[in-house]
Length: 335
Image 1: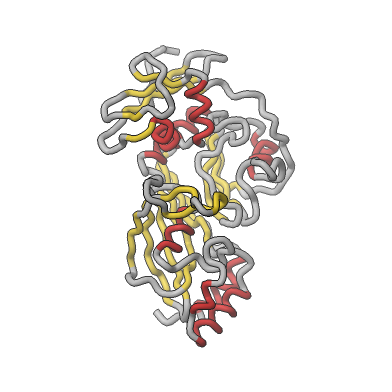
Image 2: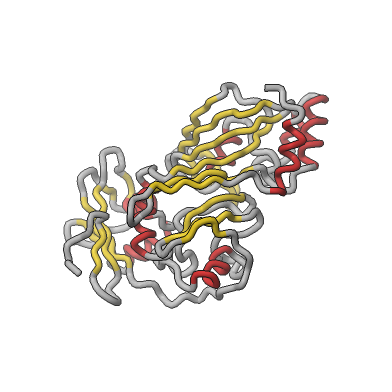
């Protein structure tokens, strides 16, 4: 195979050498190198910092520092080392695979399932289940996140794409960076938004007062969410939400930021119903009694196939654990 990069910018250097990816910094993408690479390749900051530490990142032939700032026009070369032998156990757990080919699969994740192993969740995750089904996943994300291109919160259900090969992983991550993967959600928020369509742009980072939460923080990472009201209820609204960026807890944090948190969200929306008037409070408490968890479901996913370019589109209906509350509220819809 030639040493010239393929059209996706990926060099195949032979067994054991890893693969090399090149990305050009566009106008408006200046910032710290480690943050830029995390966004560009869909990797964790820890993973990026490891690549930098091990000399796997180069700019104009030199090894940069992690806090160096990138500039428009620079070409950054990243070598993705061959996957390490995984220490994650394959587990025979049920997993709803809605599409699969030799390069990727699309999963409809149930609520309550953690996506990948982390401290406190070394087993029983989606990755554990997928390793039993697939046997091998892309190693780009590191030993604890094989194949994972994007994530869903533990208590969020719905669609996500998983890469089987490094090439698919890198190409899908680049699609994600260029905002070419469309991710839509069905959600319910408390109260009534001021407009039927809303664009929320507010930077997100760790909450300085509680490191287990995210918050809108000046100097945080850019985050944009598009919201459309589908139905108006007595004390809540049914929403269609589309992500332009993909920060941790983005939808939940942004809806809280505009004063209308996700219904049933015990972290960002607990006790919100106490501020309602009598009728609204009664309705909200009846609705909340029917909710086993936050009303947030990844209902739509659309992207170009990373190898053949086909447009793939998937939809997922609201799952049974939320369907009862939805049906009850829709009988009382007011708009």
